Length: 422
Image 1: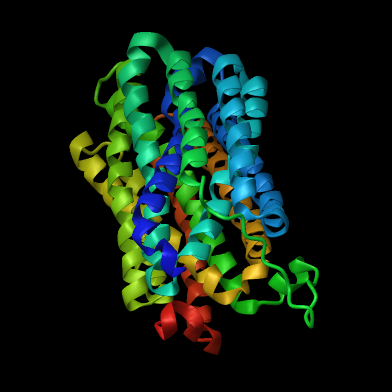
Image 2 (image 1 turned 90 degrees about the horizontal axis):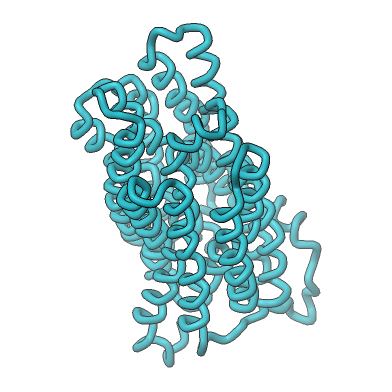
């Protein structure tokens, strides 16, 4: 961290976090209105999940290409350019989507231009903060996204009964517009840094370099199984809580509003998870924190779906704990990559991680919906079985994350993490 930055680091980080929160609004907006658009558009559960997956596929492609662009042109420049594009596509999706095909295409395009607020933002933080505070700084940045998710769900739950699901989408699409404006303000004095290779060590093709970095790839694989669980949870939790409300006697509109509003509570707790995970990893080590969070969260995946008929207040408490744990290690994976990969290859490393990690996360909502459809077709008389098996699909994939983390923890290179704390 440059000495001239120290008095300005916290305001800089807060403005960047506010920008990130704005971009996050559109991500949960569709999940919040899903119970309303499913009957109107005549969607199956797998089609509803596939629309969310299209966002992830677009996001995945975005992160892959943006990582290389950030290495070549600088993280600040790429962050700002993609912010403007994301604000436009989000509004087009909210205004135009009207059926499965249009929603899948337009939401996919929205995801495509949304990745610029993620990995370039992490790179900007890694350039500004030293290892001793980098984990919690990234934790705040990821917590800002959770704040945006919560705001989106609260907005949707409040305005959808008044102006309909499309009006709610349009309100949420204003978030990326605000995020782009805040990004311009936050980065107005931030230099655009391009990390060049030394003359005696010319820049190599970054992909083979990253793929041969075994510790970094173990972080990537652990992150991928984490993404399967986390992105599946984010896509389906509002619908799950809405289903619980419907089983308790709520109407469709009431259930959808409850599902969105109550999921917002879980995102508030997940903000604490991001910050706590970053702080714990700075203090006690990266792999130790990952193992604590991932094993605990995975265990709840195997339990949550079977509890759909619990009193709603109790189900929200359990879901909040799950959300806290599920996101608690997100910032730790991002921080670990910066400590295992040379700075000039960091964008490429994030790109490789994005292809594998968000590729898994993109498939997850569709698989979850497919399990719901298949179980309902075989056993239409029980929602408990359908939701139980669907949530278990997240837990089965999450099992492999801790195994990759344990492998990394046993390697000598793990001493590079958190100033030797592993």
